[in-house]
Image (tube, rainbow, N blue to C red; front, top):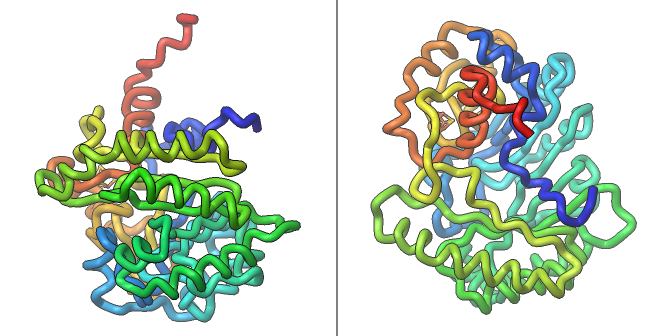
Length: 334
Ligand code: SF4
């Protein structure tokens, strides 16, 4: 992989042609990825957290459900398992079972309890830092400046080489200043991270906060890319894969949800990472039984594109509709 290749390539559904062909043919394949929210408990209260409503129920997967899910994902040939929140996944005691997953395990964490032991269960770790200084961190996360200093110590430890895992720092951008963005990239360089990943926060369409995000994004991404020119870290600013108020929705039907299963902390499945229409119950049925149930088909039929908020599967839907359903790619034309 050269330095110019973008591993956050948003058209990645093209790498899953079998599943895309099956969906285009009206079938329901096993998911390529599972996104699992093992717990809704969190020790932070970050600005713009998209899981704020979901976290209210304080739910947590039982150890038995989580361990069985990992085993079943192996049996079904699921390629990747993304452990995220919900709440903060490293607060979840049975997390170690993920080490048995045979595909690519990825962790998204706020880093407060990160250790090399936890990192060793994953191929890739993304630590949400969201700030470039103790003051802006305390402001963004609703904690203290000391919490930032402790996080930096954790990051230095987790990034120390040699290590088999890949690790990067994340930022959800809303109104950070260009100076704070530059300090954030410098922090990633200082702790020895491999990359930084910056994406815009989601606020409901039409709100003043959403308008601020759109207005501030060019300055934020520009400052990050500029800081990245002298950094050893690679800098990725990702906004194009999201629909909502910053990119167009160029498809008529949502078909992408079967590519990624979303398992919530209450042991129910959600339609996608943005729409919490739920079905199934892993406390009483296997993942396979829930996935193939009539309830799942009914949940997919209920999708109303006009009611969808930010769509993280925007590009997947474009690929499915234009490349696989309508066969519109002019492959013959060089
Ligand atoms: S946000 Fe809507 S369009 Fe996007 S994946 Fe979810 S249900 Fe489908």
